[in-house]
Amino acid sequence: MSIRTLIRGGLVVTAADELHADVLIEDGRVAALAAHGSAAAGAWTADRTIDASGKYVIPGGVDAHTHMELPFGGTAASDTFETGTRAAAWGGTTTIVDFAVQSVGQSLREGLDTWYDKADGKCSVDYAFHMILSDVNEGTLKEMDLLVSEGVTSFKLFMAYPGVFYSDDGRILRAMQRGAANGGLIMMHAENGIAIDVLVEQALARGETDPRHHGEVRRVLLEAEATHRAIQLARVAGAPLYVVHVSAEEAVAELAAARDKGLPVFGETCPQYLFLSTDNLAEPDFQGAKYVCSTPLRPREHQEALWRGLRTNDLQVVSTDHCPFCFRGQKELGRGDFSKIPNGLPGVENRMDLLHQAVVDGHISRRRWIEIACATPARMFGLYPQKGTIAPGSDADIVLYDPHAEQVISAETHHMNVDYSAYEGKRITGRVDTVLSRGELVIDRREYAGRAGHGVFVPRSTCQYL
Image 1 (cartoon, rainbow, N blue to C red):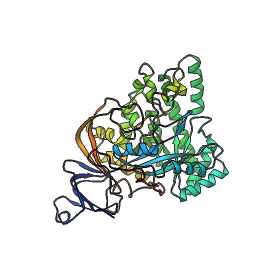
Image 2: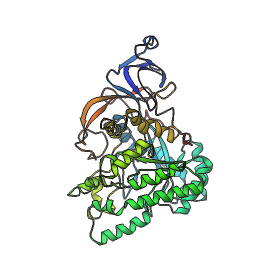
Image 3: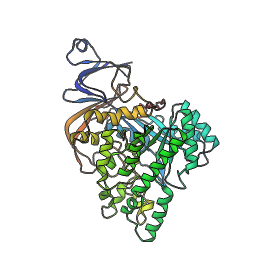
């Protein structure tokens, strides 16, 4: 039985507007908005009324880059779809787009079905999938068309990780050509993995084994070079390109130059590159292992270029690349050899809060916060306006956000299934109060009210910027 819900008295913030409005929800969707105190809003009746006085009413976050249960380096990401989506909800994210993985020698269908099985009946919030292409061949190129038709409309390739996910330029070009034909968006991990492996081997031979060397061998120039090469291959193929986890000023410059030419090239960064740096990788007693991810953390001076890219729209999206590994027993696999530290950080619960802190700090506006965290990822990956906004007909994925509450980020209080926080001890202003997913309460005034299995797979249309 459907419950009519009325959210009263809050400031509704979307990428386009800010207005003091009441929101009426029916059958899991937004039915109407009306100015608070207006005759229209006053006439509404509901089974449940939620008081949003003093709070923002914002769309649920769309995290377009997560890795739940990802096998990596002889272990697997510590968040399952159950624990990871619950943590996402606690952080105000109501849709994740995770990555199904095709292993070498396997069909895309086998990889996708494995991820369907991992997620089905486990998720607290809605989810969709990208497809990682590890083995580009005639069969898998044909399968790309089939996946687009069932709502898996983006494909990730890697210029990094030789022997695991790596594709050479020829395979990348073939996949891009197929994407240009079928409407699929190619996502690129842009680092020159072949050159990086040489530098890793040389560093280890010199006895440079600590976590900080992970950042030193994965050079800024090798991210910039790969970004440039990916852009040129996309131009040859006539394909759009989305570069994931951009971390360096020089890589942003490559994207900006392409966009200045009017090319359909897009870029994503992540909170770790905006708030953390190589200082963290250099923490003593192997603590730096907590911060090993790829692309790596960069020197602090790169942060301003990333913020500027977000303000100028040379970077359009902030996702987390959430891929958590516990310090004990997982990150520790790389003691004595930084190349064996599993790559990835926890963050799906922290993104919306950290970006609100960026509003408080003056880096971005309130509406830009919603744009880069909700609306643009939804549009980029074919989910808008079902997701990413508050408008009649949209899914009632809504967060009541308290902009004045203060909190300290800590592993003691987070809900991600990992034994440390990358932002331990960071004081921030702003906190999620209540979360609805398709009109159902998942977080109710800081109490978990959700359930595994509420979240459903959402098929996506193609990129809405093309």
